Image (cartoon, rainbow, N blue to C red; front, side, top):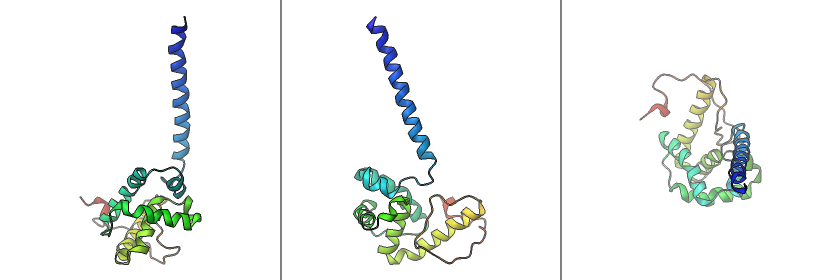
Length: 157
């Protein structure tokens, strides 16, 4: 008889675990930030940090940003930025990374500014908020114009 109860207990346990994980995933889906600075400092391993830097690295590359270091070499810099500026812990790591590159590599500033303008124009044209939000500096004055066909670096192969 105890064997008959054992499988049902396992099923019940699995259902509870799936429900809890589903609630956690749904809560994370409500946020428009994928990985925050707090996640970076408190929960992420070095490998997870590297994985978080790869998509923004590839996006920057599409906009002509030539990183002077390998992505994993930015990890200590981002750690330092977050430790010295705790107000950034709620920001998206992609933005913190882009801002770190902007500060450390003046040669990439023009490309990063063009990327920021492009992402903002695209969000206006699509009438959707810019996610993730790229803010290199607190305030950049810019004109927001419409996109022209063939002007989309994200469509490049």
